[in-house]
Length: 178
Image 1 (tube, rainbow, N blue to C red):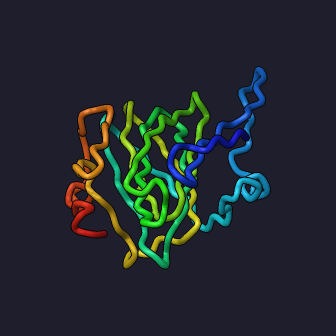
Image 2 (cartoon, rainbow, N blue to C red):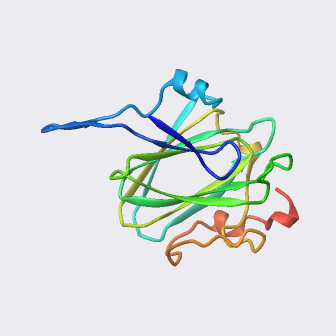
């Protein structure tokens, strides 16, 4: 695996090194020792799978509040997605900044989202599968989010939004707190 620090503090792009032959390919997607060597949490306790029917579907922007912060390891295994990370850690040098990443089966790329950052994604194709691991179990009382169209961040989503949940559409603006 090749770890590349993203612009946001503690966020990494992880490119796979696949071994291909006439059967297909093999690639490692997580190694505790390699994550630790880069100072990243690798104690994943839950794995999630999200399937999305339509291009332009938007999910997010989500996070969990302390003391239930969760880091995420995100990967697209079918189709393509545009994943956004927003730094909401007041003590971070990249506080209030966001960065976007395209993930697809073809590029084999993953992103590591640090705890305290909001994460969301938009599908760039029909029938998109996203899988991700988290370092803390889902805790409903700690669930938080910010609006995908919050002017405090002016995120440039690549597609018109074709599907979004009422919950994601109704998250507060960041100035109103999380």
